[in-house]
Image 1 (cartoon, rainbow, N blue to C red):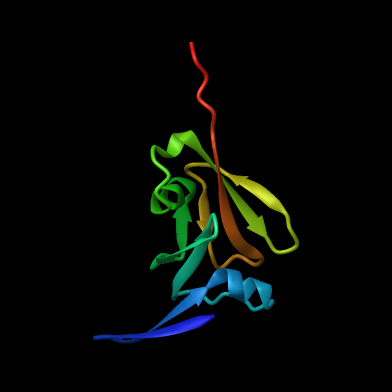
Image 2: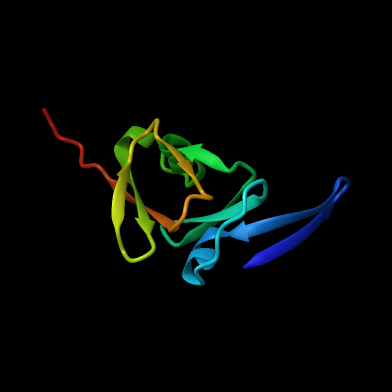
Amino acid sequence: METNKNNQDGIIIVIDIEEYCKHGKEVPSGQHYVITVDRQKYAVKQECLTGREILLLAGKTPSERFQLNQRFQGGKVVKVGYDQKVCFTEPGVEKFMTIPLDQTEG
């Protein structure tokens, strides 16, 4: 759930938001985070990212060819816009899923 890493400034706590959510714990601000996108875990230093930044982090390029969905505790799924800011400290944030958008011909 938490990983401690030492650096020159002291201890950095890395929070796995999916695990925190599963255990009903509040995600603290000002830390580093592990987010889950399509069952793959990614470490981020920011508390908030845009939908586009999450897609790029997960290697989904060009990002316009993918839809990002956010899953909350309890199973609620919400589409995330490319420029929409997602904060990992919001209550109930669990993980993210991507869906490839079909290309239409002609």
